[in-house]
Length: 325
Image (cartoon, rainbow, N blue to C red; front, side):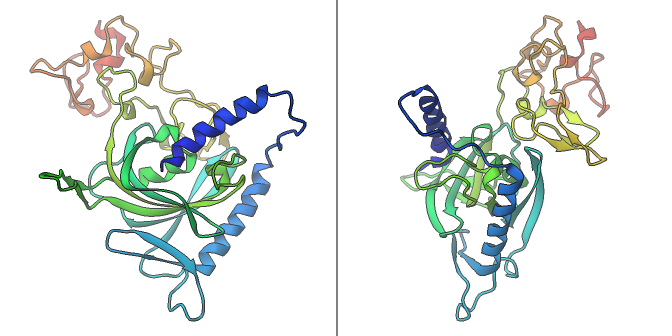
């Protein structure tokens, strides 16, 4: 269980050991060209979607099987019981077409790429329709620490409601987001391998998003989701997976690749706001500046400007305005 996290950790350790070992006579395989590998992966995914069908029960537990003349089912692409969607993800200079199915969006909270999610899932090897990992009981993950495909697709869904278990009965979940994603290897493990997953393997995940925790990386009282930068040229949150960190490629409105978009660092001290306990550099901690006189801390949407007003949606909130002190 939980190989989605463990595989990344094991692979990182393996690479470190391999790099320090001088007795091996075999050189590790150089990573393949991303564009060439993506074309191969997309062809395999398209073929799978056209030649397989899926079934799901009332709890959105999913199974896949080969489509035969006697199957009595429609292909994944043509089945009217759900809608196969696709979205474009730009990474490593590649416009990845990612197919996904949204059985149900969910009704409550939507995660961002810097949050923790409580999720049940099943990972499936594309070419064999065989599970390689699953968590029937939901488990916690930080979206910054799992494969890239999750951080792009999971925020399209919301959590649902739940009733805590009492008297030995389990917690029950309802109205949660549920879906399937078909990931090319460039958004999965690429040239890494662990367990039964081979390098350059496109994979499938069926999942149910039960709950989430909004994270506050610097414990300054402002959720990290509210400390990311908006890029008006793309009308979207920049640094999609792990804002900040890495040159994650996106496109501007002209179609040009944006390779160096600054993260949100209000005071220019080199520490992004989501890791900075004094966001405006006025030597008054953010947590102090957002104290509510009636008790506790202001919610982000209620943090006022220097005058104490919170009515202007375009106001400069007091914790990022050094003129307040």
